[in-house]
Image (cartoon, rainbow, N blue to C red; front, top):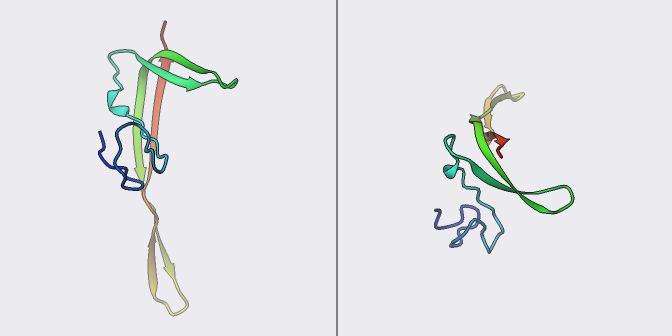
Length: 94
């Protein structure tokens, strides 16, 4: 478990920082071998629990770099913050 919040640096002891409200999701407990229970809020606002099995998971990272040429013919490189995309698919189990 993370000991300090990466967002504000405050000490944390649960899955939400009580100072800045950052939320931490623990994907380390997901397994392809056993069912997991997912809590979610339905459209009517009711919190529901679904027994499910992880079928696929992927993490993709990308970083873009752009070269810009100014009128003085000097080239400046602009790098954007890396982006990470996490995708997980589940099927409902009985």
